[in-house]
Image 1 (cartoon, one colour):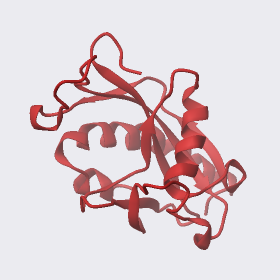
Image 2 (image 1 turned 90 degrees about the horizontal axis):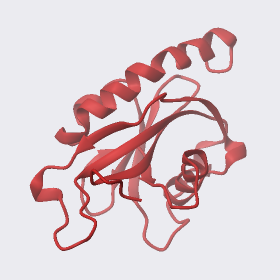
Image 3 (image 1 turned 60 degrees about the horizontal axis):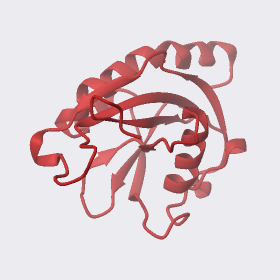
Length: 165
C-alpha cells in the first residue's frame, strides 16, 4: 500500500532476547544487515502484517514472541533516488513504518529462513540494542534511532517486571 505522498506502509520488528540483545539479520545477496521488516497488505492491520512478516522472514509464530509494544506514530524514511524503482505507479519514494518490540520466547533453533521460497536473510546474530543504528544502511539510520529510542523504555520496563532479564 503506497499512500498519496509515495510512502509504502510497512512494519519493522525489533526482536530481543532475555539478555536484551536484538536480532540482526544479513540480507540475502546484498550483504547489508537489518531488522526484519515488510509491507502491509491492503487487508491487514499493522499487527497482522508484523506476525506474517515474522513468520515469513525468520520462521517464528505468534506463540514464540511476546509483544512488548509498538511505536505510537508512523516513522518514515525517504529512499535516495538511486534506490527508487522507476516505471512503477504509484511511485514509492520511501516507507512509513510501525515498529514493534518483541521478546523472543522460543529457542534459537526456532529461527529459520526457509518459510518462503525466497528467503530475506541468510545469516543472523544477537547484537547490542543500539548497534543497528550505526550498522544499518545510511538512509534508515534516523528511523532506527527513533524506533529504538521510543521503544527502549518498554524493554527496561519489561526487565523490571522480570519478563526480560
